[in-house]
Amino acid sequence: MKGFLNLLAKAKLIELSEDERLAASAEPPPEALTARPEVPAPPRLREQASDEPATVPATSALPSLAEACPAPDGDALEGHAFEDIFAAAKVPASPYPAEKLLRLLDGLRAMDAGTRKMAVLAMDAADDNWQISDCLSDADFKIAALEDHKRQLAAQLQDRERQSSELVDQIRQVLEEGTAAIRKQIAELEQLLEREVTRAAQETTSVEAGLRTARESAARETRRVDAEIDRLREIPATFKAPDAAH
Image 1 (cartoon, rainbow, N blue to C red):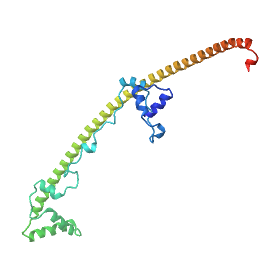
Image 2: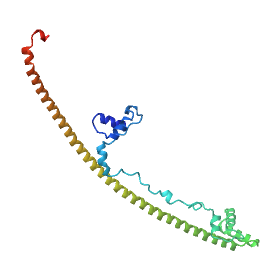
Image 3: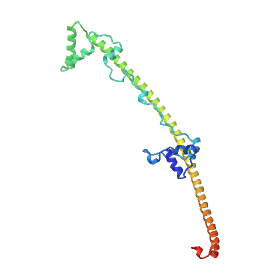
Image 4: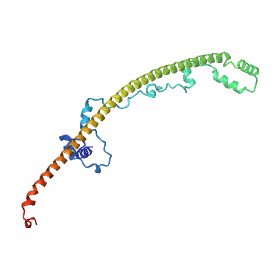
């Protein structure tokens, strides 16, 4: 960049400070740079811009919805084993669990509902180790446990929805505030650019007018000197011997 500044200074497009001239003299020429140099702002523009709007900041670190509302370990919304749900609800152990009776009913699907019921009641009467009431009680406990699990699931989802809604509102607010700030900076930078373009045009006009004045002055001086030379040549032309002229 300093080498490029040096080229601009040699072309008399900008004027470097003493420190910039010393730094530029130590830099390799732009042709030796492998990366494309960044075009710097003229020193005068940099000085004026010191009190102007600051550089637009990097993108705001908006909160991540995935990070803000994660499902804690072991608390996913699905996949809970029924045994864990029943254990959490402290469902008492049953001499004949409801699931065992369901497997028995599945084995009797070939029968109609009435025949299937009579067969189960007959098994109950023939076996003193279990009673239909045990299965009914176990099923009631487990149904209640599953209904409570559903309510907990709905509450978890409602809480997740509330957190997500609040976070989305925060993100929108930050976006609106950031957008307003950036647009304000853009407007200020556009005003700065307009002022610099106007100033550059005025200075260019002034420099070009000075150049025209210098050219006209040099032309007048040249004509004046030529006129004096012609006047002085009258002396040698009049008094110098012809042989001395060679």
